[in-house]
Figure (cartoon, rainbow, N blue to C red):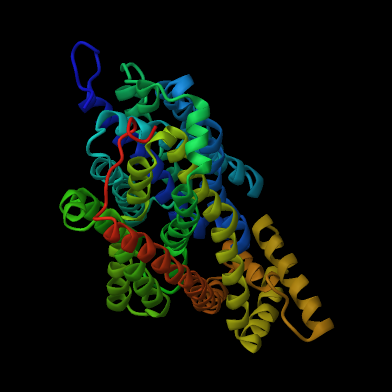
Length: 487
């Protein structure tokens, strides 16, 4: 541990500040997730467009990890955190004043890049502060990703409960932990990374990261573990809320359990090896996610969410811990690559594809006759309204009507968008209520089907982690490799 007065390094404050910085990233995750349904309705966005906004909040993380993680040794971890501080401020303000899809996307992207900078700096910082206990301390550090989701999710729910429904205020919650970690960290003295302290060159770090077979296996597995954990979590609030369940509370429950389990990671890791823990996690998360895709009532939804949370809680930090302990000379670059692959996969593939799947299955679930009859009544009502929201809804419904008359079929995804436009218009309480009754179950069904499409990844992960676990058992057990011994 590097907490020595002679070096002027306050390890406790640095670890606390790192945890608060991670809270800023997770509050961003929770609040963007909490406002997805509101954004979809206010700006009349498709599920796929919302998936791109949610995805930008993930793959932007990957971009900054890829760009800056290799520079943690040369620029210093403190410099990366200065950039992340500015990114959180600028990104949140951009989203708050957004006028449509483009500015929402840009704001989410900037926030995500700031999130990536936090991980690029804080993962090697924790490893440097606690070199003999990295898997446990990384799990305890990563308590504050689900912990921050709980904080942000409860805050968003509380704002709704007291009648403060503006999504801009919820995005503004990101600024609170941002200012806090700026105050805690930006004037502190930081230790060197493990690589710098051991004299590992940039070339050696790249060589260890790209020529070690285990590293490639872990990178492939990271793409899938991140998809299983973050893909469904990104959609839980919107999907369940569409079905009449308080989705943000389910997200809070999932992440609260994850936080508690990660805090107790020391007991778990000492009883089961990291590779054994990953194997169990793959099996349990698959069962939980499959159950969540079928659950309908409050009790069954929370029961399935509990199993899912127990499955995914150790994925991210344990994956990082295994790389740090088994490929130590990969250093900050190795940890950064893991985060890059995980977030890039979720942001560029998993989240948008889950949105596209949800759009397709939701459209198939729309009742044709009821929808056409609703649009016919809505056209007559909207014809008397002059406000911009009503006119936008009228145009969207007219487009659907033309397609229906031409092809005798409702177009996708324009029909669901027209329903969202009608809901956003508030033109008539009865019409809005009918539109919600039609669209809600369809969106809920489509979202749950998208959960089901992710489940096969858990089967592939089970095979990968079973192989690693058996290899460790045959070699006499899991062993931590020192950075010096790996030269």
